[in-house]
Length: 281
Image (cartoon, rainbow, N blue to C red; front, side, top):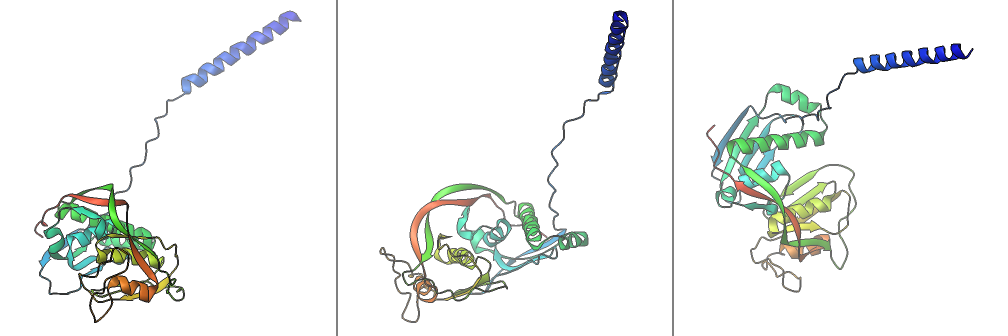
């Protein structure tokens, strides 16, 4: 009986060793999984860029529907194009000046029809981001644009609620309008007050940070009299622009119940390292 038990144990040991050897022989060292390369955004196939000689007070416009690859701009500076491509207010664009702000361009850019089909399959937000990357690539190619981001302590304006409280009217359910002219701003979009702050930064020469705490979709209309003398006094009140109408600071208080407070704070800026006049078409 003992002999039989020892024999069975020996057989089990031999079989176990053989099985382990077979498994080891068949083991294959699998390669480490490789991180997927991020998809490269498509680029415009054709882009016509021409210098524009604007008339005084002439509007500038950008057309960029999320449903196709067409990008068109009229009477826009490189600074405005950077604002669109990187989704950053022009007050946060630092570095070279001169022609980047003063020279204006007309641009008409299109991609292959397959890009149109691909963009129609995306959400509006995803298509908007893709179009921005396409414009970034266009600026790098034709304007030789090189940039980097950094954080700086800069003078800013905090957009806050004025003493009498906000005068924003009722919330709106839908629709999007952003209309900015020389003497007016109209905003109707999601997070309307935050969008208003960004538009104000283009007028007052500083980054405007929304600190109202007001969220939601409103139809905001602001009308003022343009004047370079419309700057806030040390006490925070605004000096009048002229006898014919309010400064932008006074209008903001009277019409929307909001005000701008001078402050300093950390601001993420986009620094232009290099740019050239665009290459020929």
